[in-house]
Amino acid sequence: MNALGRHLLLELFDCDPDAINNLETVKGALVEAAKRAQATIVDVVFHEFNPFGISGVVVIAESHLSIHTWPEYRYAAVDIFSCGDVLQPEVAATYLVEQFAAERTSVVDVQRGMFLNSAVPIVNRNPVAVS
Image 1 (cartoon, rainbow, N blue to C red):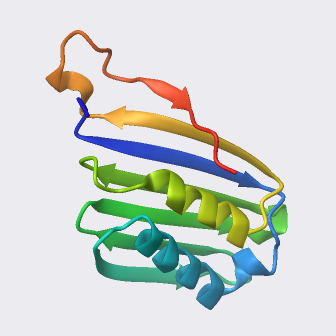
Image 2 (image 1 turned 135 degrees about the horizontal axis):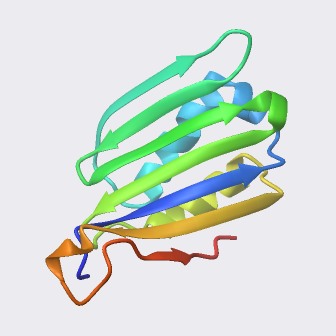
């Protein structure tokens, strides 16, 4: 890998609103996604909003997984940032798509820290298929 890390940006549409509005479900899914990606979990912090919605982050030694949910729109925004090339962020992404029953997804793969190689543009966005 020529980048410092990869940052997957997931747009999850038409999710199960009950799943993405349940604090334990969302927290459990992100923790399990981190484990499946072979991440080392450092800390877990989540907040439940009133009347609905959840935001949270799983801090990993390799960076983080974060989520923000809007159950009223059946939508969740997820970031999976991994430094180095040991993690398998696609594994985490696929697991979260399944757990939240997202019917439509958009995933952007951003190579972070590309400034180390002057021949490569700073921002390189490539879609990644997760299913």
